[in-house]
Image 1 (tube, helix red, strand yellow):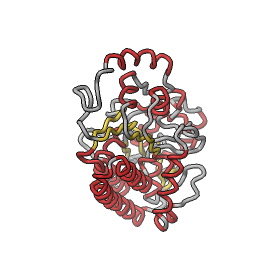
Image 2 (cartoon, one colour; image 1 turned 120 degrees about the vertical axis):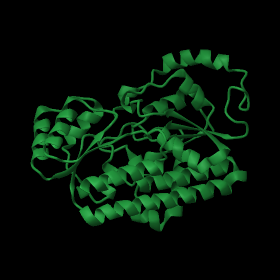
Image 3 (cartoon, one colour; image 1 turned 90 degrees about the horizontal axis):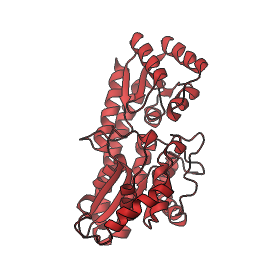
Image 4 (cartoon, helix red, strand yellow; image 1 turned 60 degrees about the horizontal axis):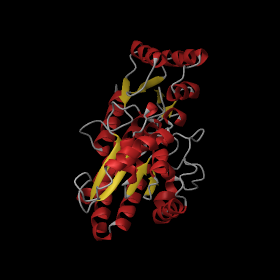
Length: 339
């Protein structure tokens, strides 16, 4: 997403939030207006990371997510003074990074939050400067996690979290990356609340075991459909289809334009429609939270060719956990490929 589209007007926000802060000046962490007494306060940019934090933290944490539903479009989200107040009270902050949720960086800076920030994108094997491949993560996991922790603690000013050209920021669609994010959450919570460290570690281990189940399901798709062509209207599910051994054949200019909220160049649209009509594309996947006229044309062309069309969201649907949501997406993908 284009971070300039969600740039937080810090000056205006600070002025507005001053009234909110003044009204809450008497509230203590355990007061009536704050969350549960004695529990760690975790703030996540979206409910995807918020739900994962709840899984790991259990009853020892209170989690607040800034974006909480599929009705809130992350492309054009504008944070509020209330969001700034929430961030200012956090013990731990979880953001996606990679330019996806730049509003969180603005919130952290404007609220002068002192909490440690976990940036999920930095755990991706595609993150610029990350020399650890997936195999190296599995072979030397402990060393990798220690490096991430040291880097995060050393850099607490959020520099380098701006949009990175060519980097796909939708890292929550990569189960392997989320495995390491979960472990980092458990580590940070354990440092903040050593008395509950065993609970955090146990919960993280159970979560990672479920991640392995997702990876097994993706492996089944790869075993039966490796190399199949997939068209995505926006790069939201690219990590997931890559993990399933599938090939993203979308013209880069098409998905980039949709992601940035811009018009797709006519030549690119024609190229995309020709690709859909060629008969080589097995599945089309759209972002259920964004779209436009060109996206509609592609979906209509796919339906005209009897190509299965799936819709994946960016935020966690109501009533789902991260695991159940990803498993549902994987099953939908498997079913579409099976015809």
